[in-house]
Amino acid sequence: MRDLRYFVAVAEELSFSAAAERLHVSQPALSKQIRLLERSLRSALLRRDRRSVALTAAGVALLPRAQRLLADWGDALGEVGRAAAGERMVLQIGVHSNLAPGLFERISARFAELLPGWRIGVHRSDWDDSSAGLRDGQVDLALVWLPVADQDRYAYRVLLAEPRWVALPADHPLTAETEVAFTDLLTEPFVALPEAAGPQREFWLAADARRDNPATVAAVANNLAEVFAAVAAGTGIALVASSTSESSTGGDVVFRPVPGIRPGRLAALWRLGEQRGAVNAFVRACREATE
Image (tube, rainbow, N blue to C red; front, side, top):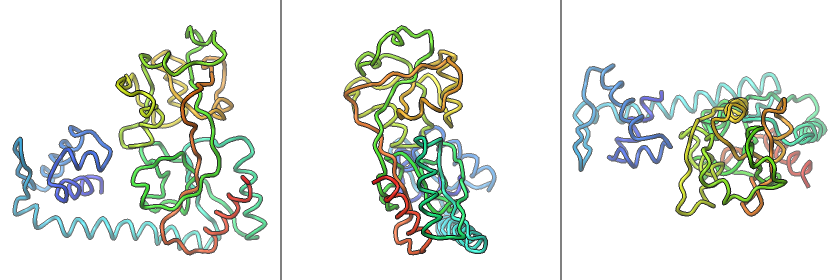
């Protein structure tokens, strides 16, 4: 499905650069997937030169079918998930990593009071999907850090704000400080989220605070465990939510506050137009557990 999604984006934009931006992937990665699709179909789908992109006859024939297939697949995943959850009375929640201590427990307890007999299933997602499974219909709601890719597709409620701290190797000179100015981090190598995370990746690289100092990315991590491993190995540093410091094991990673940059915002995220009572009850539980 990924190859078809990439082809549809290029065909609709008629631009590899615009499609790559829309998909939150690099242009070389996008071009590679299109070539693999063309090879598997044994047909050229696009004519491209340095200035323009155009569909071939094969591409014109494939485009509407690919669009329908992607739409049907997304609908099918959503319907299957909703049907299964309805049968089992389980609400599937997507997350990327551990939440602030006690938060999920408070939400779960209030949800159980609102809908006795319902259970919560937790789906842990890597960071290449900033919606934590909501985009592809794998979950009913997600608890994620804003911003997410294609955020206008979702409704959300901000639950809390947490300061961003820096995760440092234990032998880093800045561990001697009680707090670290972000200007002291500008030239440091960073551990980043995957490119597919889009605006979420940019937020945790603090792109908004860098001005003319783009981040140096030394490694890419798909989850929190990979972040800690890369930082502990001295590959780079990373910005994390302050509560994340309680998820680290051992003393190989040290955390320090970074004043002066915007805090992270944790939100409950769900699909626009969602009307199911269990979803509404979970959003209410989130609100009441964080007020």
